[in-house]
Image (cartoon, rainbow, N blue to C red; front, side, top):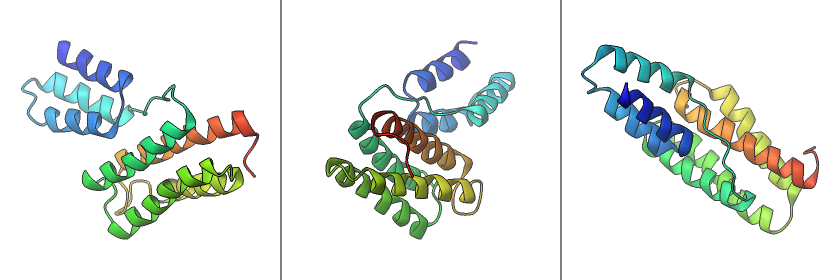
Length: 150
């Protein structure tokens, strides 16, 4: 099915929150039930791809994703959004100042909170996936370049 292949290709090539949002919005109006079910299943199993970009760009993307997740209702609680946003905004400055352990502290906070709020009234599964996996990718790259986070 061309529509399923297209959805899969978009998410593998780009895999941003807005891409997933477009697919989720589209599938509501998909006329073919088999295609609709397959795309829905794909959306449930989707994991954001690990981008091949420098760490500062990944940090900027994560900060932008926090805004999108709140806008899409995937971070449902404004106070939780503000907590994530504070952490994502701080990452860039901390990284530029070479305060790697502080970067690690913020990354670990995001990972821990995303995990504990996963599928709750505060954070949808979609929000969790982008916060958790993307933060994990940043942490992996930090540890490759600077050594393990404490």
